[in-house]
Amino acid sequence: MKLFIPGPVTVRQEILDEMSHQMTFGHRSKEFSNLFVELVSKLQKLLYTKNPIFLSTSSATGLMEAAVRNCVKEKCLNLVCGSFGDRWRKLVSECGKVSGSVEVQQGKGITADMVRKELEKNRYDALCLTHNETSSGVMNPLEEIAEVMKEYPDVIFMVDAVSSMAGVKIEVDRLGIDVCLASAQKCFGLPPGFSVCSISQKALDKSKTIQGRGHYFDFQAFIKYYEKGHTIATPSIPHINALNMQMDFIFREGIENRFERHKKLAKITREWASNNFSMFPEKGFESITLSVINNTKGIDISELNKNLKERGKQIGDGYGDLKGKTFRIAHMGDMTEQDIKELLEDIDEIIS
Image (cartoon, rainbow, N blue to C red; front, side):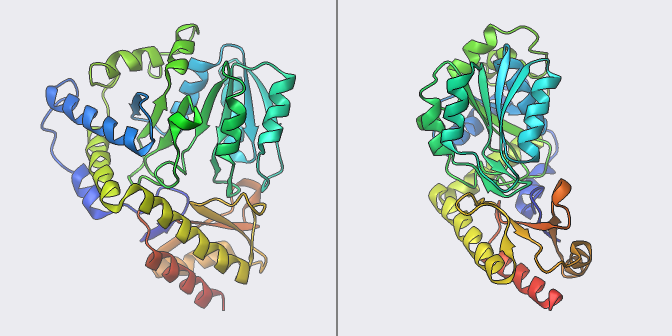
């Protein structure tokens, strides 16, 4: 079965094999510390950063909550263009903080001007941006928004790169991102249950000033153990082993080549969608790692998936209130041009 859903993605057998090894060392051992340091250095290279990289045995939602608990003292600005931007906004309220919003209709993108206007009007501790909104297929203009954020150095810049990190170039230090987080089960091409984030010194300093940071996701505890080459609590060592191996695979492919491959897969899918259906996101804001497509032919997505599963494939239905109205084709991780072309050919045959 090949998954073309927005995560989890299909995982290479080599990675699964790496995760099945017997435990031969503990998480407080020198062997683990060496592995930890090695993996962190590779992730820093991927993200073009010198910032610490925290490893978390959780989904990225845990790190989203951590970012709020550690970097928001009173008020946070949430940029919402779909369900996952809304999730971060809800997390802010659930953590007892005040949430302001810049919100647009699903399918639309957040522009730098929208961000600037809101920051000019109100004072915030931090800003949460969903870089790639998997519910609507919108990729927000990270570069342009980052330029606005440089005008507000006191505001912590937090980016959900869950479905873009390792598939799209994100130059953390140049862009001035303070918290950049992602899950392992999307562009990294690993099974779910693990996540990573880069943390700036500014975010760490802000964390020191905030009460109620919690325990499992306390950045101050994270950095204390990080400096020793360890994680705050018992981590998923199989995930760390596998991610370390996957990073070597990514470097063999070439980081820039990986980014270009994702762009090429997106181009193939968009052209097919435009010829057969239509793209849901506003033009110019289309995601590079997945395509959300208008179901203009009114096909039964469940029936389509039933037929696709007989061919060893699966796509995603629309998310939330877009269910049935759209469908989603992910082109992320280790997917090849042949994979996506075979899928599109299968869909053509089934619906004809």
